[in-house]
Length: 256
Figure 1 (cartoon, rainbow, N blue to C red):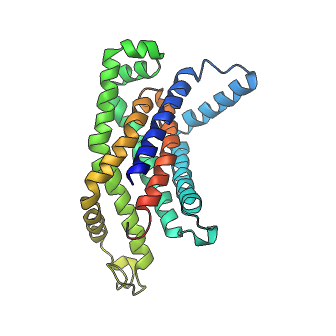
Figure 2: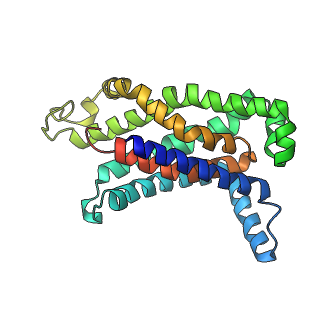
Figure 3: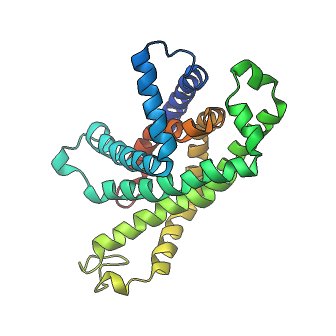
């Protein structure tokens, strides 16, 4: 477990370094007309349909991460894939990563941390960023807000609730042992019961879950909050593919 924690932290640092180069030189190193045109088309899609494009990316990304984890890391064949587990990651990716995080990163954070200051800092070259003390303060505040508020109070509770809800949907009416097998239908299942059971499973894991997530996301977020806002979620999604694979292996299976 510790070994994998170190691996993903190292990978995050390398990925963060690569994304820094991408964020700073994206507009400077595009030389051919074909590449420039493709870049402009891609940015046009993100700019004109931001919510839909980010939601689609998040859903497909988490589904892909889970399938890669099950088939490549765990050695399952496609017939052996746990489809409920894949559904958990697709649902979580669609509702939380593509929905809640879109609002948080694109709408809320720029308002909380002075949109003009953040926008100026995000679009500056690295040398100017290092001299922008107000921008650096905003960067650290955004990262700390993510680690202190988002991760423990939103991200993990949402994940555990989605997982518990799909577990309930899978077990209701089956007679299986546990919380839900004896219930006749989903209409007889109180939402409060699902939420309560999910949070009961989260509480004993809260410290280790948040610590592991912070080890991975701190370096990534230092980059994500430094690049232009419209590139922020795509950068997060690229890094999140690795993180979601980790989540699939250690948090996705039944009983985990």
